[in-house]
Image (cartoon, rainbow, N blue to C red; front, side, top):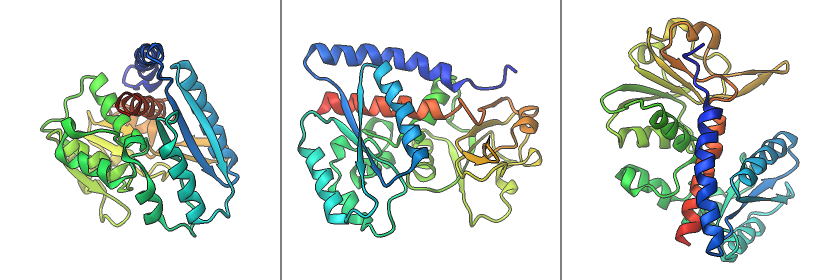
Length: 281
């Protein structure tokens, strides 16, 4: 149907433009290269990263995988980050989540060079989100991908009532800040929010990032809503988003599908972060 947002085709168009930019950098002797740290043996993470590698290659950039044993000490991992900070051939890096429970997360975050922080974990980059779009440097990729998706669809957020469901440090919180900075009226809901539908029913746009299958039901949205689904869960081999997709699709003005909606835009935003980092180092 016409109201299903094709994030993949939008991302492909963006990647073609980025490819031109990366090729211009290469002519200047700057070969854009990123690293991703994968801690432990997680087949699902590795599969996702390998798909991301292909997207980087298509855009004339490179993504290197750095596998780290699960029992690595915080100090050892901090040293690995510092090595990447010093490596002039590495323009940015990511750390695949979740981090092991034994890690001192503050020490990890403190070791990250904000100029190479493709995940936007550093307080410096996160703090810039409060100041407004003109101060944003390396914004969190999923949040940035959603903003870019809305821009590509010419959806004006200024003055709109928007509910963001989920308050993680890498999606919900930064996305809320980025939307407020663009003059939207934003409500952030999360696991402790009572009567979620009280907020979603008033919303022009709902953006959900919880990973709870079909958290948002048909009776929780108004007709004409724009539904952006960042959630991802797999059950009995089937992929589910946060929205009750088939039913809400009938009420929505626009809706992203569980696959091929926000995911490709996240990769596009990561590549934009790499391009920004490569140009500014």
